Length: 250
Image (cartoon, rainbow, N blue to C red; front, top):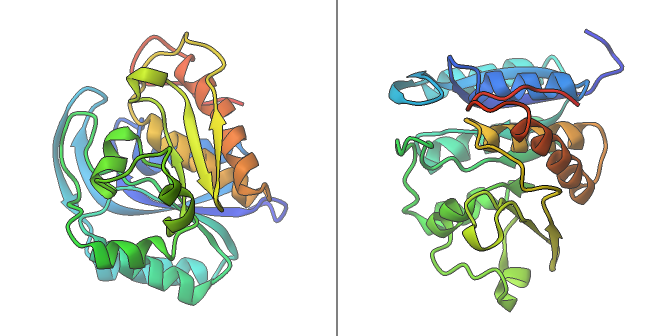
């Protein structure tokens, strides 16, 4: 492997269609000239149109995989995708932080698939707060933010003061401002407007967005710039084809 490229790790599900999960993440890492590793949290049977079934990976197996990679490589960023529980996520985060405290962590909180399959239940605020304190950025859409924070109102003062982590609120599900993303970071809110309205829905677009941010962080960008660059990348992805499977390019 090239020593000139940073290392990034995707811990997420395996989507055999390649549109989402670790395959989409690795495609995104490669386009950003980042060496990508992957650990699967689940095997799934799905296409871009339909989700059929899944098998979760044993947590101890995932932890041993994390330990093996971190003891062998200097991993700059970790992107995390689907998980069965907050406890499962917390164990992963604790392992990463123990092995490499400086590694940046991005969590794409995929609570339900685009076909409405539910992956994780958010029902313990104490564990959620502990989890968020170990993460550098979460990337929910408008449906997911309300599951994580039922009282979330993005223009209220508490958003700027009480958040446990930075949040990129993706605008793909916001009918009133479609495509506008909001970054909540250190008491400030930054708005990222879409460059066009000529975008088509894509299977796994949330995975691609979060892994693009993780790749940019590995390349040394600050969080705000990493999100801005990822916005440019995801817009190219969304406009690349007329189907639900997009093409990756920079």
